[in-house]
Image 1 (cartoon, rainbow, N blue to C red):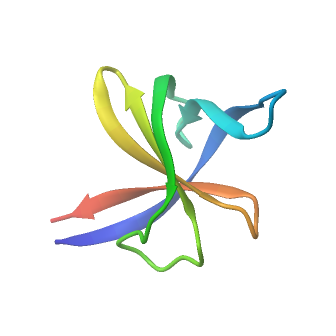
Image 2: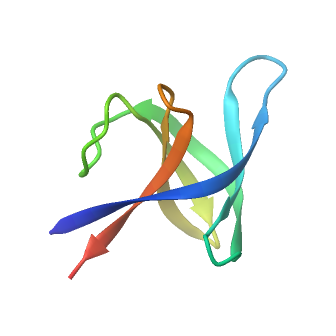
Length: 83
């Protein structure tokens, strides 16, 4: 299976005790999806080219989704499966 990297806008909160938590994902067409819960934060290799991203495992609309953060350029992305 092939994947495409798609950069997205993300609303996030910087926690008082340290750390960063995404609260919503916003597509380029304006659709907004709220992050109900972050279940895991880990460094893990994505399916697309990226240098040391942080993977946030999120619950969005009741489904587990990955949201990736690239700290070196302060950008968020998702992976879309290509047919």
